[in-house]
Each structure stands twice: as C-alpha cells, then as structure tokens.
Length: 339
Ligand code: GLU
Image (cartoon, rainbow, N blue to C red; front, side, top):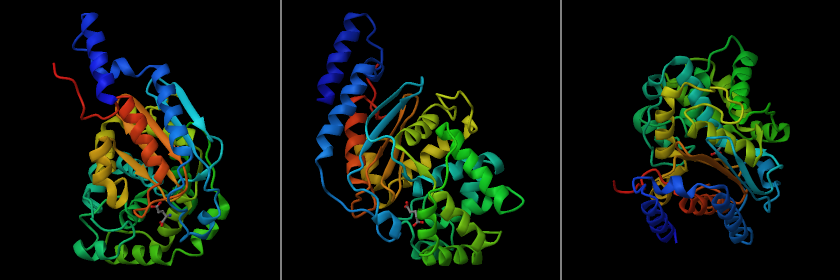
C-alpha cells in the first residue's frame, strides 16, 4: 500500500511538472495523517498482546487498556486519537532528554567520552555490559550510562540538578511536567539493582559525584508523568532541530540533535533496536511505562502510550501503531525518491 501510494504521488508530481518533489512531502497532509492515525488506532485497539511491566510494582497497576496516539508536525500541527489525557511515567524515554542536557552543558563529546555511543547487545540493566568494557563502550540509553548521564548534570545540590532536569523535560513537552509520586516511591523502594549499577559505574570512574544521589535523581526523572501529546511534542522538538514547534523555544542546541538521534537509532528499543530500525528507519525510544517516541527528522514526532510490553520491554501496540503510521506517511528517512 505504501509503495502504491508512493507511486501514485510520483505520478501526480510528474503531471504537475514537479517530479523531483519528494514523495513524503506530497503525502504529509492533514487528511493523510488523520487517516493513518485512525486506521492504526482501530486496528490495534483490539490487540491484547503483552503485559505491563511489574518489576516496578506501581507499573503493574496501570490500566492496560490505555491507548493513545499523538503526532506533532514540525510546523506545529497536533493530531491525536484515543486516550491522550492519561499520564504514564516517562521511564526510559527520559534518558534521551537528560542526555541532550548533558551534551548542551558539557559538549556533545562528553557523552561519547564517558559512557560511549555503542549498543551493548545486553539488556538495559545489564551488569555484564558494565563489566565487559569497564563501564565504557555503552550508551546513555541503558541504565548504567543513563545514571552516569544524570550524575553529569550541572547543579550545586540535589534540588539544583533536579530542577534543571525537570525544566528541560518541560520545555520539550511545552508544559510544566510533574512527578508521579506513587511511581517514584514504588521504584525507589525496589531499585536495588540500579543502586548496584551506579556503585559499579562509580567504581569504574564514570560517576564522579555521589552514586546514591545520582540513582535517586535518575529514579525521579523516570517517574515524571507524561501523556501521549507531551511525548509527541518532545519527539517533534527533536524532529525540528531542537526547537519546540508549538512554543517556538529553542530547547536544545540544534548542533547536538544528529548525535542524539544517532544514539536513539542505535539503542532506543532495547535489544530490538536493530529490528525496529530495519522496519521503520526511525530514531526512537521506549520506556517500561508503555510509551514510545519516534522522530521523523524534519517532518514529525510521534508518540504512543499503551502499557503492555513484549519480551524485549517495548510496548506492543506502540511499536505496531508507530510503524504503520510512519510508513503510511513516508516517515522513513532512508526511503527517498530517485532524482
Ligand atoms: N526506571 C526504569 C529502570 O531503571 C526505566 C527502565 C526503562 O524504561 O527501560 O528500571
């Protein structure tokens, strides 16, 4: 269907004497976006695969039927379907935005130099991955690298660091975000493994401040509440060279966006990052709260919230819905028309 549409668009572009017009530019109309969202929503609403994460007890209690899709274009148009009001915890999606903060504060290479920009081939909270390269040669989207990134955020004390993180996320989302306290309490009481990871990263010299404090701030950042529209706006800001398309604010250094997207493409969907990129071409990030964001650079950001996860830890419905919508809209940056 995607190919048929692409061919049809090319023919139309040819008739108009504009054969060099990219296929996607023709397809990214309001009508096509609305149709793509509605069709993915109806198709996957009935899908009942996967299960909520339960290693953080509060996540097991979230309504598994929650399902919302939002898409924000780089020119600031918002489209949505389903439940876009309910908040889930941002979880690992937060790692992207803390990473951008560190890049902006300390230089883009600070991330590559401290924890690396390579996929680990291990689960997101792997201790083996730390041991393999002594805490380097990994990335800021798995827990060891992410807690290390949080430890690099500038600030005089806990509150100073925390406020910089929350303000940054809020700028990306275009509204003041807050912490879901029950999720924070639940994870703080059960995050022994992350505390061990932070201790090991500290032992290898990748966390230079107090690792206990870094883990606690990291746990708090994972508990920030977001709805599908917040997440889509955050993704759209990345799609728009770091400028929030709705607020107009330059939220991060535009020069650091390509590196950010590269890390997302490499390691955004846990062990299935390769499969995801193969299918969609989109830099993306998932979280165990059930959200996934994906970025079609220069076009749109899309987000889906649906808590049931597959074995790799990625929302089942979110992956399918984003792949369908993006493919229908020509979102894959690797798919271009011949000149
Ligand atoms: N707060 C979660 C953890 O550290 C985030 C995991 C995730 O979303 O991948 O385990």
